[in-house]
Length: 339
Image (cartoon, rainbow, N blue to C red; front, side, top):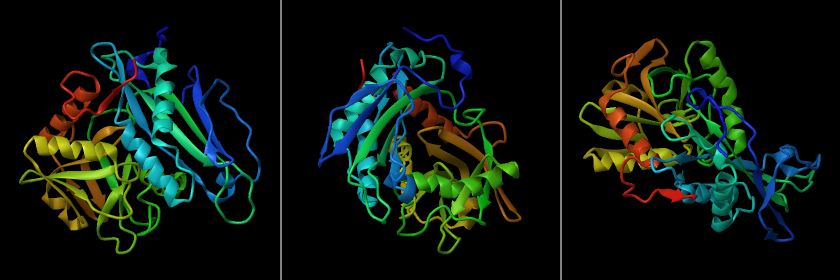
């Protein structure tokens, strides 16, 4: 049964739905997926995830499409990224089929919570992997739990697809070279909280971080990848070992190439900001957030109009959303039907 919510005014926040799913790794193998209703579960006080940070997660979305069906956007990519993260911090990665089964069942069992087509909202799925066995010496767990929960969400930023101001955060680093910035470890977000909070306190919704080795090259925004459109129509995004490989960014690059833009993945010096006519922050939660200005010390770089996203960002946003909502052909076969 379809839930009766104010779909067009949803925020990006937790909401309890009908069920979530769980699978456990124990005695050297993964068990079956089971449905759960109670959002609370018990965990050992000495669980490795609590003491040594063996915890990672993914984020993906399901959409109610124009024909009434529900579909997930590129879940295989999320499964592969979680596996890469798990291996990096010595966790037991969930098999591809198990991950896909968990996220698909999360949507299928909560269809009444998938926002109706035309509301601009979506259903956010959050798979979580944690080390659960007790240990007081530093080392990996021997038991793990995979959870998959989901909820309806609106835009990550209050005004949705609308230009924002960004601030270059140089007092705090987001990730170190050869560290874990390129995987989706839970602790990455804790390390960026204070810097992001400081930026918001200054009046900037998002912060841009530079590489921690030189504080010269652009890494990414606090919760999303950086990309820009140059004045000669090139799509440029950073190449770095400390950047999370965004599935949204990967998708936008394909769309940009289809539009005839040259795509470049390379180091971007902060001074190059003056060469961009459009800048965006991209990720699962916000899809694309247009950036009107970036403040770096006493310099302010501006891009396009203050109250309107640029032409190319708008085209990219409409095309990726059109695929997700079933309004245009899914020629890349990105969508996985749930029903």
